[in-house]
Image 1 (cartoon, rainbow, N blue to C red):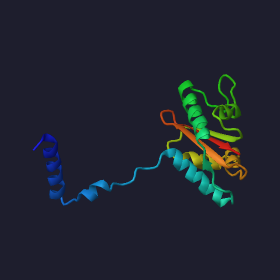
Image 2: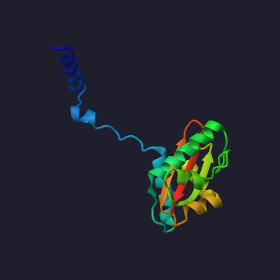
Image 3: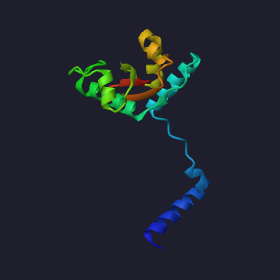
Length: 154
């Protein structure tokens, strides 16, 4: 036996000895969805309650949102406008999305539930989420600084 086949035989024996089949080992719990996906799901659930169509994720908006969250965390500011004066609309267009709609930002939250709950309790943020004319979304989270950005498109 080669070392590789010996290792395989030992692993198989351990699994069988433990009363487990190879099929049981390959079926593990599905990983948790990324937090950005959780935000989209929670937002779409809230929108459904208001009669709005679900938002679809757009990679260009996701890119703009992710880069904005990372930039805010890296440079220590919290604003829809960069320190150089670049606005939300300019950032979204630079990412290739032609019709910016709205933006929500947050910081300090540690979960999708917390941040979406906070946005829904804020009149302005809730208005953006419940705007039925918005059709697309991108979410970006910077975990080290807990900066969150939602960019919406028309």
